[in-house]
Length: 233
Image (cartoon, rainbow, N blue to C red):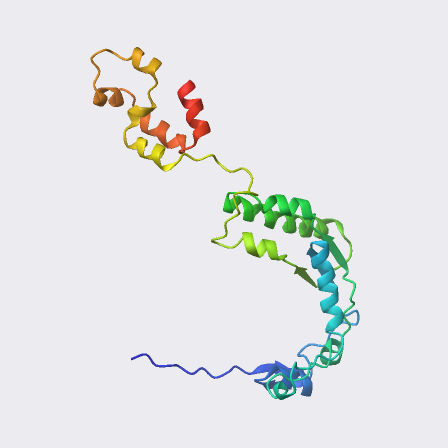
């Protein structure tokens, strides 16, 4: 029979070497562990224009007290007094560096039919902006915020599929009936190829006479376009 294993909550450290389990109580009573810098939080943000706007709205919202949505929830959802009141440092609503991602480039990347290439292209759009800023910008950044739009979450998850009507670079794959023909590779011999074969050749001898036949089939990748090029050659 399975048994539940109870793990005690670890104690968190706060200012003046004080420890408590609850972060709200610790911050309220003693403050954060380290004294913040005078300039406060220097944030860098990368995202679409809408994502950057949402980030600024969020930073502005946490400057003031945040109350629980219902009065009876105040016991387990205490009031958040505001970022500066809790941590003792400012956080400017305007980020130190903001890097907008091109909406069209992101949209095009998310339409890729190949999942791995789609994720790589999307990540690269965000990553290259951060790397360029670190190389070229003189303004220091304490923490980077990457605002992910809903479409990235929709199309870049492990089992995400792009709708056929909008996807790009889609391979024109063969249908099931044609795939079944691959069981007999002689279906790929055209009439002109048959005429060039010896008159008494058996199917076995034909295949055995082409040592690279299997390799050719693997390279074929079940694609109509490649099939047409292979047969025309």
